[in-house]
Length: 225
Image 1 (tube, rainbow, N blue to C red):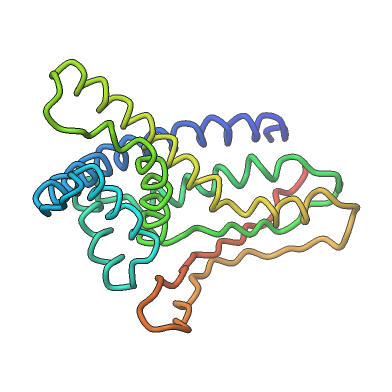
Image 2: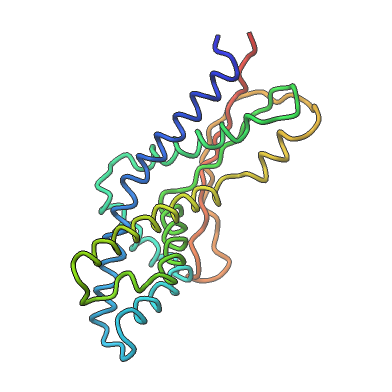
């Protein structure tokens, strides 16, 4: 049976590979989406100019209602041209959580609960995080510039989007729960294996923000040799 350190190494390698693949699909889609959004800003006729209009649109993203989130995230899903995005996102969160939970003070195995966000929810969070970064760098999309400068700006835009997606993954990982579960003294050992998907959370306010639906995956601890 593989040692604990070997298992950690495998999960760490899987984490890196799955994250790269996820970014490989999502970042070009986000880039296309934001470029299309900038075109809308240019055509808006805003007297302050397209960059200002683009920033106004970016500021509205966190406040989208449920229907708006669904429509816009479906556009991004189509742009990814990936028919296994949900499975890839699940693999990313499982691998990240496994690596984070490898550091522990307790000697006993505990049941590991892994929360995986819905694709729609994850993409909206990614849009919000990327929009914040682009808002302060909106000049990268200014029109009527030399082609060489434009290409440099687009490359820098991709870097910002990559940073935004990684930030979204970090922010959605259950770090607080992992620290409380594993960085504590020995307790009762949990067992059993359960895979479940939570029911949608009911909105408290009409059409403000989407319900944060997540899949909860509980894994049975590995049996020591």
